[in-house]
Each structure stands twice: as C-alpha cells, then as structure tokens.
Figure 1 (spheres, rainbow, N blue to C red):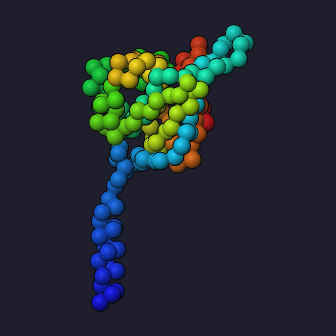
Figure 2 (cartoon, helix red, strand yellow):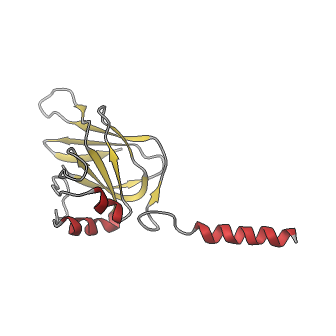
Length: 156
C-alpha cells in the first residue's frame, strides 16, 4: 500500500510541475541575487561611471513583438538605439520582468533563456527605452549593460 501512495505522490508532483516558466518552455524564472550592472561609457577617454536609477526590462525574445505592438511601436531589427515607451504591465503580460537599477548600477536578472534586455533610465511605466539587445541568459549569467556613443551594448 505504501508503494501505491508513493507512486501517486510522484505522479502528482510530476503533473503539478508542468512548465512553470513565465515566458514559455525556453524562458525560466530565477531567484538569484544581483547579476547585472549598468555603466555609462565615456568615449572621450574618461572613466566609465555607473548608470544608476531607472529600470531594466527583461522580455522573452519570442514574445517581444507583442510588447512592441502593445506599445504601438516597432523599433525594427537593430535594437541598439531602440526608443519605445513600455510599461511594466506590457512586459509582465508576456512573462517578462522589470527590475529596478540601484544607484550603483546593479540589478537582478530573474529570467533565463533567450531574452531581450532593455534599459529604461526614466520612471517605471513612463520612460522610453534607451536601447535593447537580444541575449541568452543562464542561471549563473552575469551581464554588464552599457550606453555610449556606440549605443546600447550587453556583455558578459
């Protein structure tokens, strides 16, 4: 009898596990700590400085067109200088996340898989993106986003 109970529990656990990821089978949620930093790049030879404040939008790459449509804008294929006013509701509706950027430029990621990362230096829900980039994030990913004369870049 105990064997049947264990089998039923295992079956229930398997059925309940399903696909818990917010953006689909290839995008997953993580609960790690700070995994990103934002910098302003000075192209004149001065030191780079932290790009604090504002927020970062993390959008499942296969659903980013839905966010652009909801925002009423299509920045095209080159997202380096993408300027789209997006809201947290639009991002979250497709399984994405918005993350605040601290004054020292650090932020949490929170998603894995193919993701479009956008920097919004303004207020949440009223600011325009200052560039976006498609990236592949893993559980242990650590990225640096930067803005300078060459536009928005992600490294890491």
